[in-house]
Amino acid sequence: MTVRTDTIPIEGQADAEVELKYTRHGPVVHEDTANNVAYAVRAAWLDYGSAPYLASLRMDQATTWEEFVEACNYSRIPSENMVWADRAGNIGYQAVGVSPIRPNHSGLVPVPGDGRYEWDGFLPIKALPSVHNPDKGYFGTANNYVLLDNPATYPHWEALHYTWGDQMRAARVEEVLAGARHMTVIDNMRLQMDELSVAARNLVPLLRDVPGLDDRSARARDMLLAWDAVLDRDSVEAAIYVSWNRALRAAVRDVVVPESVRDTIGGINTKRMIDWLTAPDGRFGDDPIAGRDQVLRDTLAAALDGLEERFGTTETTTWRYGGERFKHALIRHPMSAAVNEDLRRRLDVGPLPRGGYGGTVHNTGNGDNQTSGGSFMLIADTADWDNSVGLNTP
Image 1 (cartoon, rainbow, N blue to C red):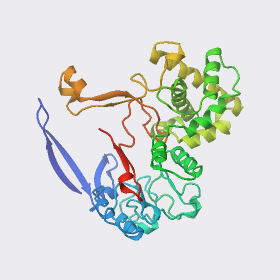
Image 2 (image 1 turned 30 degrees about the vertical axis):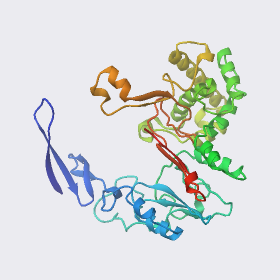
Image 3 (image 1 turned 90 degrees about the vertical axis):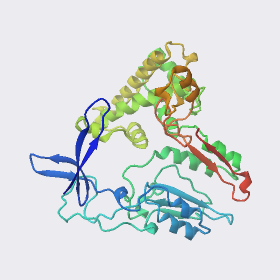
């Protein structure tokens, strides 16, 4: 084990000295002194050649699909979905990322560092998921596992991730592309800004026959059932749905995830939540349907309570999803905390009302303040480059 001592200066206090320990596998993150055991992390992103995004320099010089795939071989960190299109009409998708070959373990839990569980190199780029000129003439990605619908077709199912982005976004992309005969630049702009929630279209109908709703919840239920499932910033129904979705997600997590591991598991997958609610099992009680309906009833009431508190009124017509009280974007300047209020207002951007959610094509994140999403968007017209458009976050 290699030990290095670093000094950290602390304002107004004495400098602090810390010991950094490393094994041949990587940095030590925990020591169990009682059992004389140290836990180190071997991570692909700590290896040489893992500087992010430098491979894009090679990709920019590619003139064929084959050259593009070769350039992708150097895109090690982070794992991403890369796409290709050329003026000859060829299109392609290539998953990139450095994926260790672990012959006898998954990498999910610690293993002894005695040589029995060493990595056996990395998967070559051509072993990672890819699509080239699909028969249907198009494909879409949205941080999803492109082969998710048929994992049996791919032998390295867990090569890049054990968790992927919400597939609801990709489902909406597929829906729009499948229904289009011709996609113009304007059509693609609309698609990138699409705020229809596929999850809402699956979850809201579950409220239709829930018994025992009070008058307030019944009115909210009827509003949602008549809603188009678009999370528009000016929508009252969007505010009700997102508030309900948050309460519902937490409640379902408490039902299906044992208390002892809830902090470890974190959030639950949207598709799995829909499946559990559509076909509830014994975890919802002796009468799973009644138990499920109780969860739906309680979470809708809790969501409405939260909205009344958030907006300070029971008058639903004044509720709006997008705005400073709910969904917004506030981009703080790095100097924001160090200046006075007048200058801060001039430096910061927002708060500005937003629509969308983490599960819509226009991904604006799951929090009230948007802190993630597509900060750079590009629609490239390979037949007329001057017709291309882009958008960049300030």
